[in-house]
Amino acid sequence: MADTTFVAGSTVILASWLNDVNDFVYTNGATKTGVETLTNKTISLGSNTISGTTAQFNTALSDGNFATLAGNETLTNKSLTSPTLTGTTNAATITATGAVTSNGTAGVGYSTGAGGTVTQATSKSTGVTLNKITGAITMNNANITAGSEVSFTVTNSTVDTTDAVIVNHASAGTAGSYGVFAHSIASGSFAITVTNLSGSTLGEAIVIRFTVIKGVSA
Image (tube, rainbow, N blue to C red; front, side):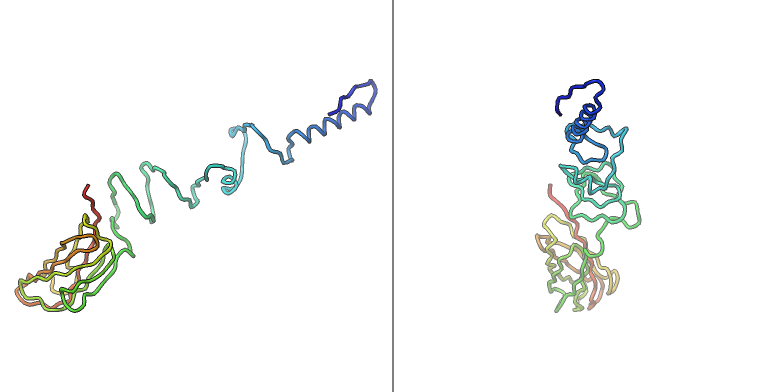
């Protein structure tokens, strides 16, 4: 801004000075409607309102993104204290250091899609393959004499040596006439032995249901 000397009664000089001040403000100062970059300024949120969309605030945030109450965001490395989860929770892995419990009628277990079915061919000792964490095996209807037992191998990629496999006679055949148990649990397979507990020969295509419970040794 140029140096200005005031002379009494000089309106021309005063107008020139005001123009210089006006030019200075618009060149170097902030205005109500102008677009300026403010540096090292503090805005008190207690007496000011800042509005915008989530996308706009995320653009302004230089080291992350905001999470909203109603939005769908992925949270990483967060700890939830006494959370209440409702609906369906989809996650590749959930690690809990405390107990996982359910007080509803649905209980805790596998959902649709986790299981599968397979039918045994040729004989009751023929092995089957079912790479599911839970499922049903329909056995061959070959005869098994009274008091005899037969074993077969289930190839299953979900099973490891430290797991527990629960099996039971689920349906078909004579109820109470078969003893069923799992054994020889290894990485990728387990065996099932079926015993004829009745007093006569049975030739039934019974259905055996199994469930794998993941376990560890330490």
